[in-house]
Each structure stands twice: as C-alpha cells, then as structure tokens.
Image (cartoon, rainbow, N blue to C red; front, side, top):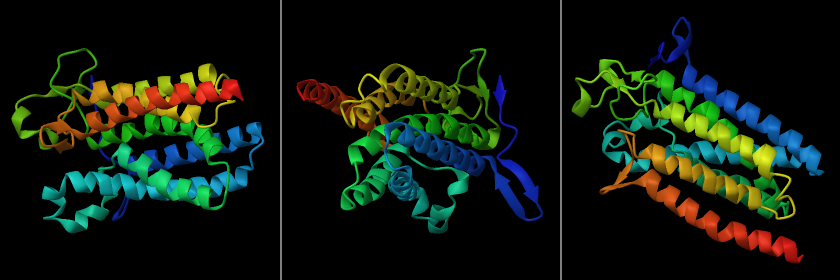
Length: 260
C-alpha cells in the first residue's frame, strides 16, 4: 500500500519547500545534464543546446500551466490568484510539450540551429523527467485512479477524494503506472533505439511521442481527474493524435534516411 507522507518536504518558519517543486527541479536538472552529455557525444555544441533547452523549459512550464488552467477555468475563473500556485500541482504535459516546442524550438529555428537533432537529444530527457516528476502527484495526492483493492493500492486521505468516491480509501496509483512506463520509454530510447535511428533526424523524438502516448492513453482511462472536453478526456485525445503522428512520421523519416 502507498500513502503520501505529505506535500511539504521541508518547513523553515513560514517558508514551505514542497516535494512537487523539488521533484520538478530535479527532473529539469537531470534532463539538462543528460541532454548536455548526449550533445557532446553527437558532436553538437552543448552550450547552444542548453540555451535552447532553458527557453524550452520556460515555455514548457508556462504552456503546461496555461493548458491545465484553460481546461479547469470553472475553478481558476473564481480564484484567479491560484493560477500562479504551481507548487500545488496542475501542470499538463501536452501543454508543456507544445510550449517547449514553441519557445525553445522557435529559438533554435530562428538561430538556424539543428532543431531536428536537438529534438532527438532531448527526447530521452523528456521521458526520464516525466518519470521523476510524476512522483510529485504522489506527494500532492492527485492524479490518482479509480478505487481498487490491488496490493499496490494507494491510500488517499478524505480531503483529496472526489465526492463521488468519498467513502473509498484506496485507489489506483496512476502516477506510478505512468512513471514506470516513462522509465521504460527512456530505456528503450537510450539503449534500444537511439543508435538505430541516428541517421534520421527527429525520428527518436517522434518515437518518444508515440511511445509516451500509448502509455498515457491507457493510464488516463483510469484517472478520476481527467481534463475534459465535453465527454472526451483531453489527454486521451492528445495521445491519439500523438500516436497517429508517430505512425505517419517515423516511417517517412526512416525511408528518407535510407535513401540518402
């Protein structure tokens, strides 16, 4: 059984350092370190990559928050100051990817840097960063699934339970399912696929998009707090689009690389 020890990692007077922020910072630092190492291995200027990556992280944070807020406006419209309380959770990965591509990718395109190579370099970092960051949901007692009696069930305290499941105690630890899937994706990208598709720029990134989307499509079906568009789970819709893009784009890139 899993049970969160609480959202606060360290309390110093009125200052509270939350696990969510610690894990997000760790995910970013580890991701940048991995990207730097891979850039050097590929013979790509790591300093230029870091500049683009730092902008991408800023764009990802803003995009992830705005995406989440947009689909939960019924709450944030009533409490607008809560929009800035990112330490309480509420970041959507699909919005983060879009925001990171727009700002970091836009910078690389403007500077005529090897954007396709950059995407391949950061793909494993994205997967590992998500695997780490998902544990922030555990400490915040959010992004969990439907009730379950499985041995790895997650205890959710009464204030965090949905009204519909107020009498239930144990739920699917969907944060764990997605974290493990992201870790598997990271392993596949680095040790099974990276060298095989290196001659096809951006191919590894699109493989990441497809693989991540497969896992998210299934995990999202268990969650009780999905962002909704009418009766459609937004993350499942985005995941379906991600899978379709990967299925279309990856073969094209591989075919081009063989013909070159």
